[in-house]
Amino acid sequence: MSLSQDPVFDKLKNDYVCGYRDIENSRHAGASGKHMPDGQAVDTTNGAGPHNIQIFVLDPDGTVLTCLPGYWCPEDLARELDLAQDLDKVWRDPSLSRSEKDEMFARMQLNHIAEHPRAERNRSRLQGFDVQYEARHRLYATDIFTNVNAVDPATGHAPPAAVKTADVIMHQRMAVRPFEQYKDFDVVAFSDYGKPMYDKHEDFRMANGQIAPGANLSSEPLIGNDPRAHPIKTEVKRDGKTILRQGLTTFLQVGVRSLLR
Image (cartoon, rainbow, N blue to C red):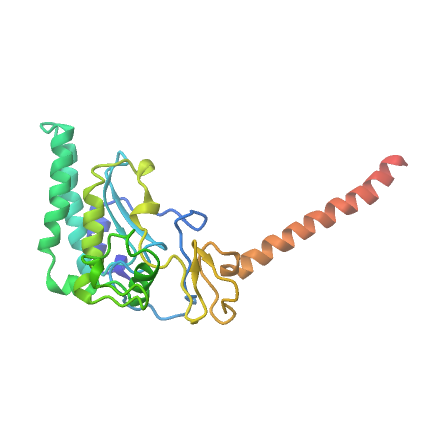
């Protein structure tokens, strides 16, 4: 819904060439609860689902101007598009050296955080289960906390003041990636926060990015890279292989006899 609403739609229509790439088989793609085709579209928090979607803004030469992990509401996305256009002017400025461009890139990314209105910061709070995952599994290896001493690794509880919002995480991570080429951009590291896979059941646990044995997924199929996320596609592939094997067997049995005749 974000891309189809103004002011974003008007900007995309007039100033951008839009495209997409299916990341289903990428190693950074996550898996989440099912979303049926006839389901109602609803708003969520900025940065939700960072493993499922990333919004790149590129210069025509493939240089990454910015990248927004997950969902972003139209008002906030529009401001990020404006920033990307300002960054593009820096990138194209022939009077600046590469080091000057990189310095300006980092400064503009970090300064943009202070320009975000309170409403955007409120819309950018990380979802509770993502915070709990980071606290329990990666407390000292993640950059989402402002104060790890305020976090309880046993329960995953973290006071809001100790957790960065998604808009802050995004700009801080972009600041150290000045004008990288899209082909060289480390999407895995950039979008790495929160649970890579989700399930509503209490017995669902993560272990090295895999679904824990015994997790109850029967009533909440996954969407993502796990074969269980795509039962129809998986069945088609399985049936296709079966048909191919049967066809080859039939050819070997019948065709060889025909040749022998």
